[in-house]
Length: 250
Length: 293
Image (cartoon, rainbow over the protein chains, first blue to last red):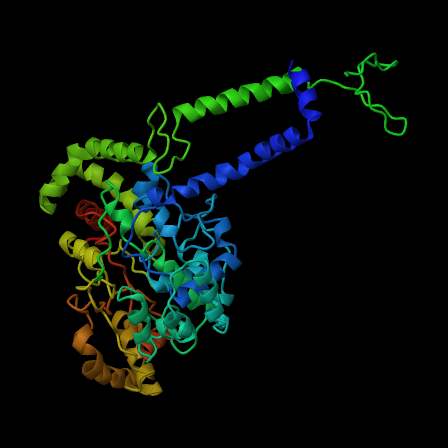
């Protein structure tokens, strides 16, 4: 009978075309349909801020160096992960991650909440040579980051691209992208004030690699690592995990 | 309309079509593959019924089993909390001396503390707490801010030069870079500082150098490190007369320290750890200091 049905279907051109379209669209529907209800699945986070130009540049370096191949940014809803890393990741926390960097493999630890856990100095030492601070580490050394000047020339265009994708960068943020990137890593410079003005008082402004005179890729990557998990406090109010939200004044 | 034609070699039916003299056998899908397809489809339908799957307009199908991973992890965490309740309550309410005198509680402190230490502190201070250059050794009983359990807990809570609003602040100025001392003066002070912990440094040849360093030390460094160089825990100024060094006691490191200053950083753990966890860690770190004065 199945054979007869198939034989019949094959001989009806229109019917067969419709059947092919129906079968082939299943994959698309499965991926697209959940987006219709995205408003009910992504949490609200009014305090969520966008990445600063320096953090965005660091994020690009994170992607370029393939950090995501060994580090995830996704704390799953499992007891051991919540107890080790902090509250499980929420969808809203990746709202401005384009593309997202959740990852699926952990050779190194999860980094979703690494921001503020270690000092800038530690991150610089660790990226220069991980064995200096973690003897058993098998992470490669990224010494060249501190020697490589950060290319700020294309930051405006990076921000504009993110804006086109729906990340709410204002025109002032885009216009000042390069000076904000410099100012965030030079706390005493005249450019630093603009960073907190545009991105909020909680934005960390510090000499990330310890050298204020030159903006390096090390500055950018450490700035990015230090903001991971700190764009919003939403995850802390959403869980019964015994965690306090980061104090905004800290 | 069905064309019945059999292949003379295999005896199978053909499709009835002919492409340039080639005919195709009309072989049915193997039974095994067909079964596999049927089973996976049935499994998919069952799964749709059991688990949360299909999006609706404003909600989604919850599934018969009613599984919600967020609820599961909350339950797991609550269960873990109640498993710990027997000792957590005591640690939260009792003071440090009481806990230290209770061997059962201290056993918990040692095992839980070791885990918390490995997760949070070991990145800088090492898994054994012995530190390394730039990160203080926690086992040597030489403390920057005090080694009493209360003081350790306070240092962890506030951090050092951290983002906590009441952070402990320790800033050694850059005497050389900011031109407060010239090169010779820096070298002289470094020699004097070295002589504090190692009298052998002073030789008849460098006697005047050490003496000159001592005078600069008394006017420039003594405010924080004390006239005797034994440090001041109020401002996190280390004791310079012992064998324990944070950044290193060799000549080059000392000169670097005096020239460029030091602003060590310890993050605040106030927001990342609960008060009970800080308490456990403080007791654990305190117990690491095997060398008692």
